[in-house]
Amino acid sequence: MSAPSLDSRPGIAEGFRLQWEPAQDCHVLLYPEGMVKLNQSAGEILKRCDGQGDVRAIVLDLEECFDTTGLGKEVLAFLEIALAQRWVVLK
Image (cartoon, rainbow, N blue to C red; front, side):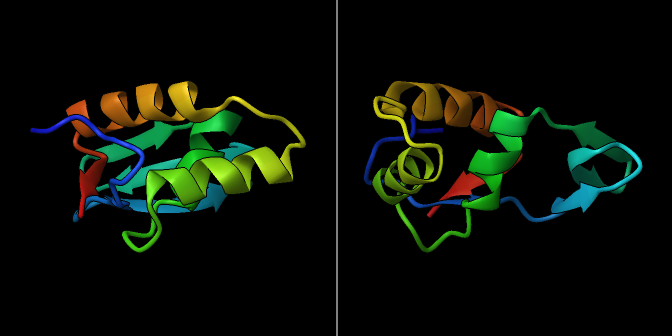
């Protein structure tokens, strides 16, 4: 498994579905054996993991939406965790 880079194009892995769960008041990842409740940051990152845009574009979109800068390291760190958990794949 290679580490994500700014050029990676992450997508939600097969077998998982990202959705907003009103009862939980958060995004969740659903899979056949259960559910992963996500914090706001994780949900915002995974919402943008469509397999088309690269990490650089995800970071820029997050920085624009939340009027901040310097999110690249945090996004890459989260994607490393998501890859290890097999929530995302790199395309």
